[in-house]
Amino acid sequence: MSKINKFDLLVALYIFCIVVSELMGGKTFYLFNIGDFKLNASVAIFLLPIVFTVNDIIVEVKGKERARSLIRTSLVVITLLILFSILATALPSSARFAGTESAYNTIFKISIRFSLASLISFALAEFFDVYVFSKMRERLGKKAFWFRNNLSNFLAQFADTFVFMTLAFYALNKPFGENFAFIIGLALPYWLLKCSMSVAGTPLAYLGVGWLKRDEERIES
Image (cartoon, rainbow, N blue to C red; front, top):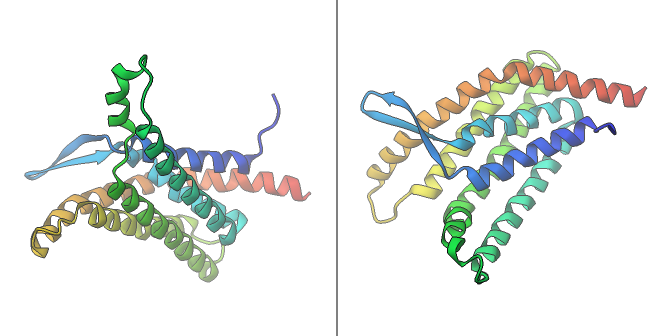
């Protein structure tokens, strides 16, 4: 079997998480109750911490400009996915496909508002994650990777969660107080859950940095 470049594999994992989050993230599942509040989560909860961790791995090994380039590429991928989804669901189906067209459209037809909310929140959070992580790396050097990784993830996921929830669910026909309570109740538990998953994934981040660095050192030698 031909050798796979480690960085290419890491980029492929990153793009996989982005595409699957967009296509399948609409499904939510029950987690548990906090008092009277029922906490549900999108299936994308398993993928988003990986996206932010890959960012930090690339900044640590390749530098912040390489990470920013990957983010820009992923934004192009999301935009193309949205555009193609609109095209695919708008085209009339053949007679053979007519019986399943409704199910196909239900799965793949993307709400413009939700898609734009996702695009905006993702761009903001990803660039913010790279900025925070690189700034801490300038101050701390290579020390305390676990701290730099988690703090940048916490802040970036906070931005991602609250910007997305606000853009996607803010109702212009309802008062600010009602909107605020609804969005906080929805976003805060979801953000805390993503933070806990980021902490749980810290050992994987260390493994990822060491794994990619070994390949870089081999190439340089």
